[in-house]
Image 1 (cartoon, rainbow over the protein chains, first blue to last red):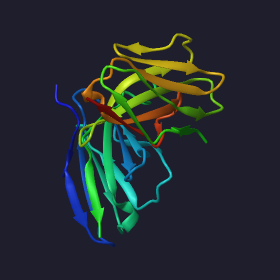
Image 2 (cartoon, rainbow over the protein chains, first blue to last red):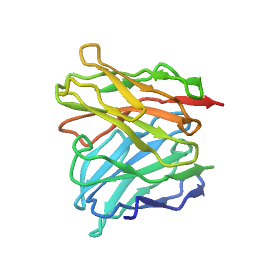
Image 3 (cartoon, chains in turn orange, red):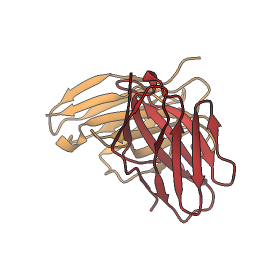
Image 4 (cartoon, rainbow over the protein chains, first blue to last red):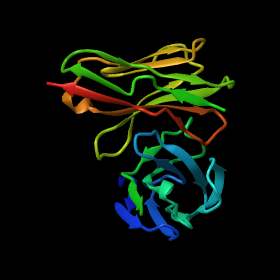
Length: 115
Length: 114
């Protein structure tokens, strides 16, 4: 059974640029959640995708957007990067909606640095 | 809004000893779940233990156990017989039964010393 994978591992961008982060969910999982973890902080929920549809969103501006594909892998896109977007971006997959019922399995994260 | 508070930014413990990490939360929901996640240095976050709010019995997983005080909205993690591999950031997290959003605390950095 393959776990959650994310790419790339590290990324350096400059302010104003756009970035795409990728996540492959664990086999058998149809739900992907994205979190932003700033240095020294706990993860903050960005949004969740369930069966290719956005299924809830945290307090993040519209320049954070996502996609989920038929194979349940997912992308996180961030436009007009700001310095405060520098963080570890975590992807988590689960089977079914709601982490309360189903454990979320986390990937290793993508470390984004915005200069 | 639900919030999770971890009041201990850092803790240390000697190998083989017991340590307790604190967590409080705030919610008006009656159906919810609580979690402790472990994030080792440069490694993936993994679930340590989970508690359903409707269960009165405290969850245990081997050396890990919780003290769930629903009325006080408190959810502490006890690690017994601490091992060097327990060194990590520990996050307390909450989700209500109808939500998709995990709410995390700021974490406690635990160091186990030999």
